Image 1 (cartoon, rainbow, N blue to C red):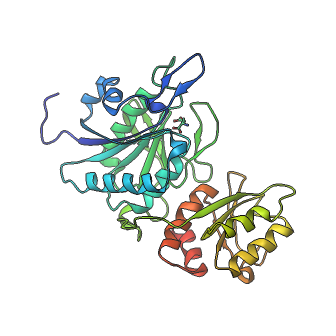
Image 2 (image 1 turned 120 degrees about the vertical axis):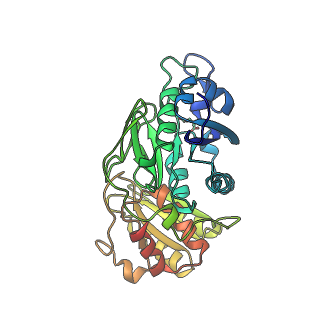
Length: 332
Ligand code: GLU
């Protein structure tokens, strides 16, 4: 398609994942084997949607995503968004930690332009690979005026999800992503968009954390609660210098008596404790089975543990106290 000023210009930032993965046997595969250029080459129809540019930011399976790569990715994404000629950006990413990266970027990018994360559950060389259609749909969303000011979005399996709502819920199926509490942002059928609900909570251009200038983020650990949970791992988190602990609590963010004592002592030692839930849905409310006010705990409301960790890191980076941190969980 001949380029004209009206053709959307999309920057693709590639980080790896299965969407760039090559099958290595009947079942095995290596994530991130393919370059960003090769990904684009597999979907020639993209030229019907946009003028594409590519930048390889990382080349990892997303289990290796960490704070340093998040900060680099945020900086490269912000640079692209700040270019007037860029309409929107697409970020290819492994699905394992996609929800955390999406939520992090949702809080730290200062722009109303569309930002869309996309991945695949089947490697690029597998039978019936899902990556090419996911990529086509992601570019369609990033190029659309309808996606402006909706925060960071994730496109997968013909669905559009808000960064705050999405969670990976299945190990292998292409329909792995769900938005359990507030539902889908919309659908995208071979490039045609249907938005349902408006974005809830503050994000991107309205976020106090955007644009991010920090060079590192405080250490925050997640402790997974279970029947018979003892206090040792909580004590260990304090000992190794964690500034915050997110509890993937049982039920509505509950934990055993011994672990509760350890959490109370952690708060007294200056470590922030956020109660979230391992259930995968619902709200963790304050002062139900524990007196959160007396203990100095924060509750995660709807955020799952891995997203609560992201918000807690950003809040701790600002040096916020428990009351100010709790306020963040009601706003973001
Ligand atoms: N572990 C890989 C990753 O997250 C595979 C999962 C995927 O991309 O679907 O990058």
